[in-house]
Image (cartoon, rainbow, N blue to C red):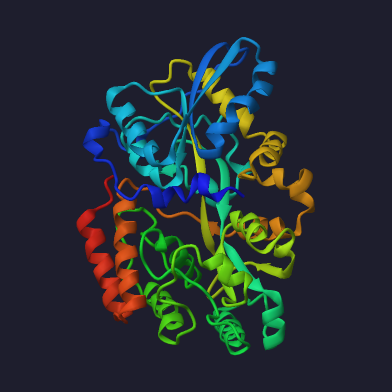
Length: 423
């Protein structure tokens, strides 16, 4: 997959745009109501902002929609990911928005509470068809403001031959198994048993699945209070830290060395998303990934992984709301999602789309589909990007300087409380 075109949405939005600049509404998100979409034919122009590979491919792909709806024109503008956040925020503030836009999952809280997004109409969009974690990324204050378009999650990539040589399982099921597999491959010749991100931008995406696996929650059910200083969160930090204190994972890994080192057998395992299938085949030669075992992430109290991807939202100020929502609904049909996967390699957010075409026959992708059922999203709050930066910073101290995990959890909790939810 062409990961470089859409490097983690969350990692690109490292600074949250001020809510006041977005013209934040005084109406709480949970008071929002979704209006029905008119029945019958639609017409007019639907303006769409899309980023990365999606922005390049959507215009041509949408011709199938306009063939079904000849009175509609889909006008797609490709936006670079690194400019998208501020462009959307500025457009909301100036009330100069398109009809539809891709929205990064971790931006939902900010843009929904700004008053810029139209609540998802339940008469047109069926929540039950989507992966639960994906749908959860659209909800703010109990209301959905978008539709999941494509998803991604993380699984474990393991050097099969190295694991067999070490006599350890390439599919570790528990935390204890993961450590045993990592140390075993290291003893069999790997320089590092596993590679995990030791801080810096986006490290929270690698770490949070461990917290969820331990049973930790980031916030209370009402999303009014943070719970970073829980025993479960500390347990996850302690376990994650042990890979670095035991010398199983590198504290520093020069950029661009993960893939060649993994191909060369210097790294036994790492966790990542589906884009690494293509990257490994490019690095190790076509078919190299056949020598790699893809496995769901190990569990502690429960299975969990991180869910990423992108959503499609319609703006409240849309000039063609009905046609906009019908276009989004069309993109959410299982057969259309399967066709979109064949065009872009974006994994479908609609569960039944995985029963279509190549998705149904690819054993490697099946692992991602299995993992998707237990994948989770971070809280949809306006301040999440700021809090994610705090986790990145404190996690780096835990991994690289040996900071006490309880001290780190307390620091994250205090800083998160100071930042607030933004709701």
